Image (cartoon, rainbow, N blue to C red; front, side, top):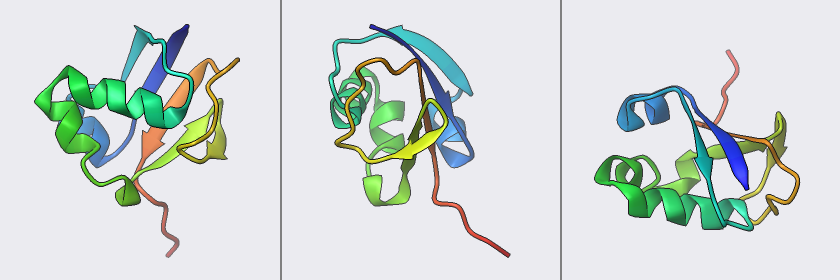
Length: 83
């Protein structure tokens, strides 16, 4: 399946780009993260501590065990804080 992947804040800085489109065989967000980690060191670094990463699927907050079936956009970002 083809997905648009968005990276925000320090994830974007570590990966070096705000978005990319990729073809994946991942069935869950966790599978996608493992594919990304295996690509290059910059991805491995960005996803080294998933406690500091949140994910949204088609602009809806999701968990890492969420299925990717039918999803078009995956966004990764740090936890949000108020202030």
